[in-house]
Image (cartoon, rainbow, N blue to C red; front, side, top):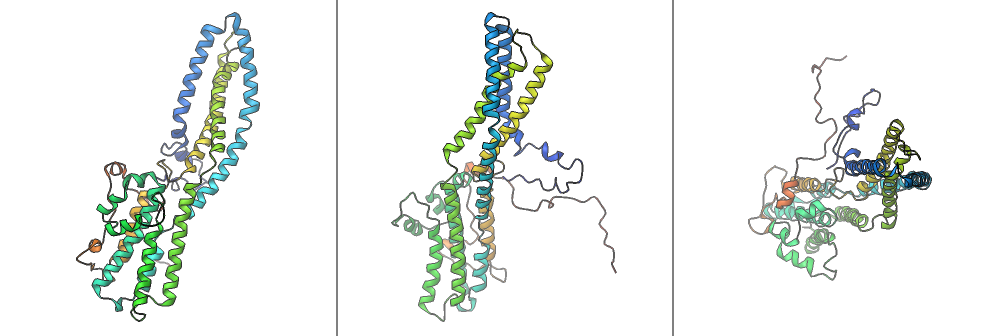
Length: 393
């Protein structure tokens, strides 16, 4: 889930404004680099112990430490100095891509509001209106389910098969056959088909009787444009997931960081043991601290790039796709299913007889489900000052 910290940094003028953020664990750089840094420290200790105990005082030790000194210079000039350029370029590219993806997370609120505003209730019976509302809400919900389950691991675990959506009441058997019977391959994501069903239903009602149509000419054009915008944004999500950063470039960055880490396991001996095999503990301690700090920054930088490459994954700072799906379901149920009077009028038969449908969890997704969502950073803040309203003049 997304880790928020705006409340902790609500002011930058305080001396200790950012200390809470620096020592948080969830989603932090410490959590990302903990495993690699522990392995690096263990390898440094093991190699230093082998050098001091078995190599330093031998005849081979002098030549060995000359080689380590040369290796240290090569590592500093060829690897460590080029890492900021590689990581900086990659970070800029990934952040631009991340913000573009975030901008494509379209919400169904506009389409639902338009249906509420444009729908001519006086032309429909209460039962007919309720059925149309439930059908439109279900089709909009189904479009989000189909796109999210193809780009998000959490949603895929919650809706692993299309047949399971039939059992959950998200789609009927006939509609599932229509999804499979098209000329498009079975592997293609058909998120746009439920949106097309909404357009076809409205056009069919208009073709039957222009006086009894669901919307006027202007209203139908506006609504169809909103559906087209929604379809385009959902398609952009699929495109971003389909075309990631070139894998060769990602391999170069990852290999450069890990090779640098492996080289520093040996080059740290250059600052601890001299050519004659004498150990300088003070200089060695400073060498280990400076190298580990430098590696922590580069490794954390690389791990941050790994996190934002795929914001639909299961990292702490990835998009909350399951919550978005539940939110969209709640919005559609609220705006479309409930009548203006607050009472629900639903048909007695068919898949749309149960209006407030929510995509059920599988066992695996239920274990991961948490109470989370979008709210302001100050929503949980409690003021300690007494609340007293004073009259103003």
